Image (cartoon, rainbow, N blue to C red; front, top):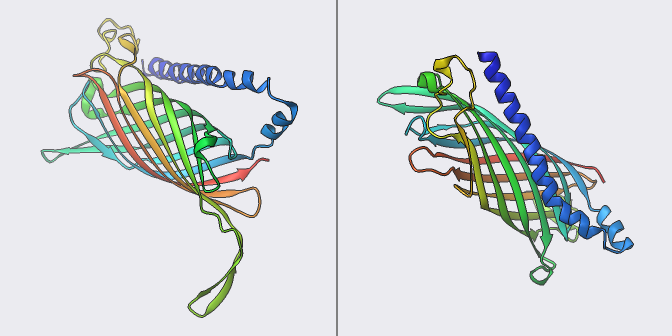
Length: 301
């Protein structure tokens, strides 16, 4: 039975990846079609956009509440890792990201402690374009869209027959990013106590990205995680699962401070915030997280 359930979960992850890739193709296709009508020089310029491989590590403070199993709130400090491919210049930004967080969440009620082990896989595609009218030398404003699909796997032995929870939460966002140029344009002689040193030119920027969920969807059990197939010895974990679209809420943001080194590489420090709630009144799932991460960006071109 356990082997069959694990196989079902693996199949769910595979379906999530296929669905995410399908949505990404839909989002990027208009861009490809549009680029085909550009001049040859414009295409060459587009292909020269700086590209980076972004590897990130961080720590989160997160909390969730699943009314389908318990009204109690669980909180924890999961570890966060991600890998991204980033193409970005002043005119356009494209990002494809896969992230994974894992940790133990706890609830203390009436001197009793219960734990929930949570694993979260998230796939993300972001596309932004510059608004020239509102952009200048110091401020760059971009707007566009983002698609995110999040897979949650939770295990809480204190809930007995409802111990395992599996959800897929997806959203299509409207996105806006404001970037401020904080670069040091000239070399500067400085003094620290009695030590004099020369600060070289340095490219730096501070950006804030806001994503507002426009189309929210979820794939989860209608109420509780006790499958009706268990009493009749048919281990179909997802038999009572329902797909709901245009229901729920999601909002996230990112504050990034990026320092570009004197080669193609860069270092980035970020604060991420994400909050969402699925549809429903008495059986919805709610989760919020705050993440501090450090990223190493390796120049690809």
